[in-house]
Length: 464
Image (cartoon, rainbow, N blue to C red; front, side, top):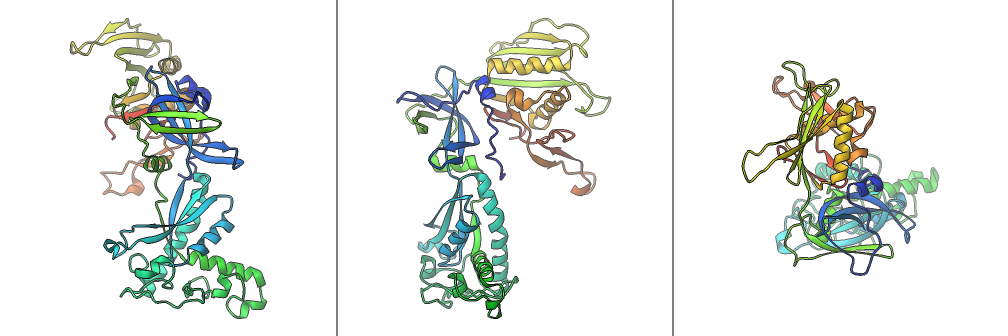
């Protein structure tokens, strides 16, 4: 998502759920067991602007928790025509100056190269960004250009993906890509770069003079359009040099965990001093933290032979267990009499004492559950089909009563359209029922999908 770094943190709620922000402390820092990570924005005093960062939620050995924010620059790689990395970098720095943080040329293995087993490495342009929103902006610019360049190469019989090999990968050699017999000997400029003879569909090929900022574009245009024609020519030339964008679709939090070797379920020493927060893994600590788990289920009304409908059906029971103690909340608008505390112990090793809260109606039931969750502060929620039923049903019924599940306990609906498919219409998805999962309050219903919390972990035992 291009807006996954949108500032959605709610410090008051996160503190209420047991994860106050840790941004300054003693030199020894804090020891925490990493539970969850997600994206955020933090203010960088040196840069004078918001930058992408990762929220890391930890549980301490004494059962308390805290949150740390680790700045981390998102990035992707751009494959260009050999020797054209500088042209593409110049374009990005001019066109997307507010989004691009840095550019550098790196050498990496590329399995698309036909001779990669011989040790040949690909030169790529690594582009880092201030925020993931900036990454999305540049990605939307480069991906169509890369598709167009590859399509043009395919029409001309040029193997731009894997046929470009040999010395041309290392900056001095070939022109606009090798041909099918791996001959990378295109025409060269005086400075050793390949002349760009693209014959792009959008206009005539650009000259080396236009690429270097001077001269005319397309011959007869020298006196008609002036510098603007040259600028357009340089832009077209730079974009025609983009062949592919790699690793642009790696989720930001996943990118952070890959590059830093951070993993949930490990202990870390977290230090925060002077606005700088760091985390270092304690590989010597192997015992897992004793996290608080909430397993819950709901019961709803429904019409005969119908599936429950959150538009008009009600929740009349929520049962849940936390740390071996059971709780039941009833909706007395539906349940005919008060329920007393009871014990359900199917096996001696699984004792089940239950405390019952009898609430006057559905709104009171929901408020009681939200308040109790905030009081007990579970770090893990366990459901069975909760992604597709329990969470969306609770969220919709809460909204019906003027409540927000996100503001109450930090869970947010998935922002995606979910197509259920159809087995009765020959797989015609156009006529299949669908639910729209949306964060827009005007959306008729929150739908199914992966329901996530800013702080806690959700394990749906049916949908892995």
